[in-house]
Length: 390
Ligand SMILES: [Zn+2]
Image 1 (cartoon, rainbow, N blue to C red):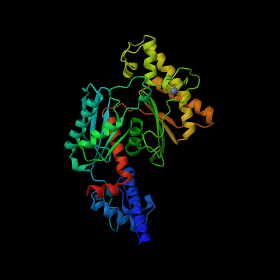
Image 2: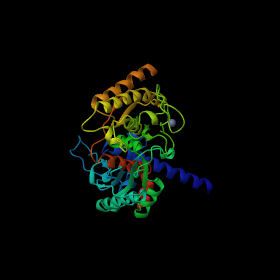
Image 3: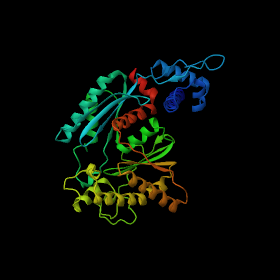
Image 4: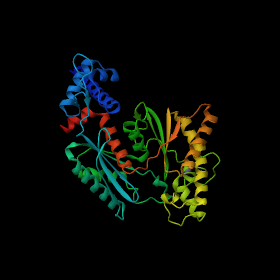
């Protein structure tokens, strides 16, 4: 009796693993036939046929007629994710909240952005939750598989610089969403949303380190198709790595930390001290339309600092590819930063660095990245989640 239960448990687990592998292969590679899926997942054709039948019955997969007959014999009927299934993503920006609904292929079906009006964090949460609920209703609540939210990553626990209204309490935000919506919710720091968006919808590889430079500097790694460090607080915190050559005092008591040296917050503070910007300036003031020589100099120095410290992170986790994101500055400043990283990496590791800059500022981007968090969650256990929905 006990061994039969154990065996059944094992079979259920195996079925779930195969279903996840099938769904992941289809989202990554596009519509696929059963034979291709068997090859891609390493499962037998019989197992694939059974799993696919189950996923079709649950509505997770659909057979799409082939565009043209392929040779003689029975035509291959590719399987695809239905365009009706959606994931929703939302993002809290200091000045606005944006939210969108996307197909599992990343095509946008609804999107809205609302100016932030709340004067407390609780009000910001209520606004965001309302916007998400509106988009879910617009997209059709029954078609939505889950909701993802990317949150800013300021390490507010040192209290310096003071948190913004958009730095809401994650637990309170999660509670707010759960009170309004029955859907699974996933909240993650913004850099992790960028990493999964790139993997599922951006053609990203299996082994990519993403470094986001913003109010803080943060890292996320996709390894073997999975996001490393499986809980938000469990890794990727590089704020207190020391930038070689920096002796700027940090709120943690150490000198030369990334946080004190090369974040947007550190740069704003320096710009205010040097009277390049008025007190109360925020990160976007570092990149004004009418640029000044003083700000340019600050950004250039920061590009060099990043060039000294990012290779240390790369040499630690040894990714196949590194992508630097964030606003950083003008194209020549960005190029100088990437060049400095290459130069230093070569000196440290003795190999060429596979590193590039990726611009993520297009409108609607953050909602999409946040929605990718929901997709990533769904694809981890699609069969279980479909069974719960059924
Ligand atoms: Zn520190």
